[in-house]
Length: 164
Image (cartoon, rainbow, N blue to C red; front, side):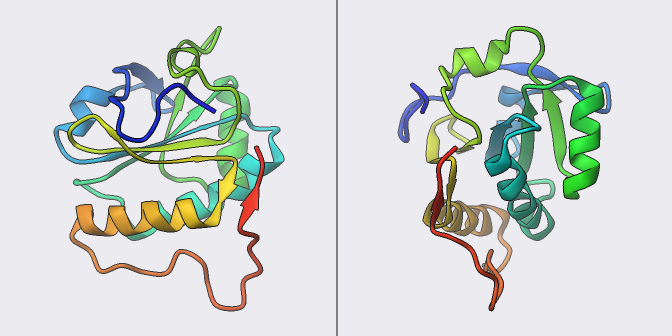
């Protein structure tokens, strides 16, 4: 859960990325929406969810859309996680004491928030929620100007929900 609900403004933040660059939510929102996915590397639901987030990135990522993983682990462990689960989108490190996770009052991971260009949360997902991720995919398609693609593949066995 989080205190930042759909319709509320997302608190501003800036974090360092795995590539050493600084990333600011405010700067990213000038280009378009940001999908922010908070996670821990040993969380089985995070491990299950992140390949689907990578699909969103591969389908809709680009100049108009930012997809960020926000890790609650150190850079070395996060790098291993990204390699193991095929994560190529930008990954940020929340750092000692999890300042951004605490600013958002997170209690569970994964927590995925889609933040619109106006800075307000337009969709959220705590744990894995197939319907919530499909809603985010549709919103990302609209924002990117790319045709909507199914997030889940035919024949893929995907539960509707996994608690985080």
